[in-house]
Image 1 (cartoon, helix red, strand yellow):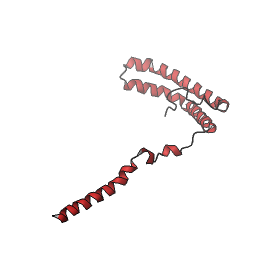
Image 2 (cartoon, rainbow, N blue to C red):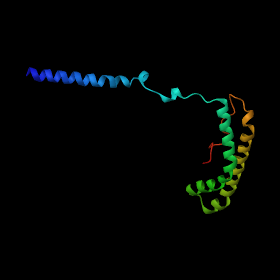
Image 3 (cartoon, one colour):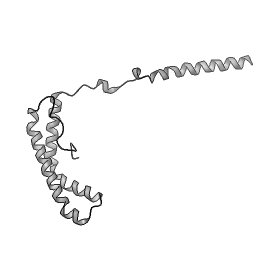
Image 4 (cartoon, rainbow, N blue to C red):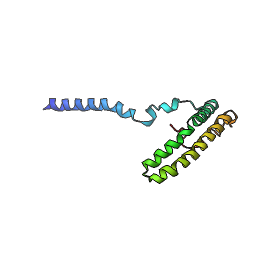
Length: 127
């Protein structure tokens, strides 16, 4: 009978010994966070991102027309709305996206380093 108690005590100590390091690894101070190693974006990176976003909006601005039609079609709009209103809305959005792209592409080197790098139109990129 003593041998069984001794075996159970040893097994319990082994389990505690094996689980204790794992439990300590879940402590917040000991966990690895990869975001801590990502450096902050520089002004040049934000400026080039603004240029890329502007060029993308210039190139794909026309695509707002079919995207607007598709959105309205998925919402179940009637045929008259899809034929009459959706192309007008899509054209207006295409003009806004293209002109916003021109603005961002032209003003990317003149932006203030602290502000003016956020997207003007949502979503940032159409595709």
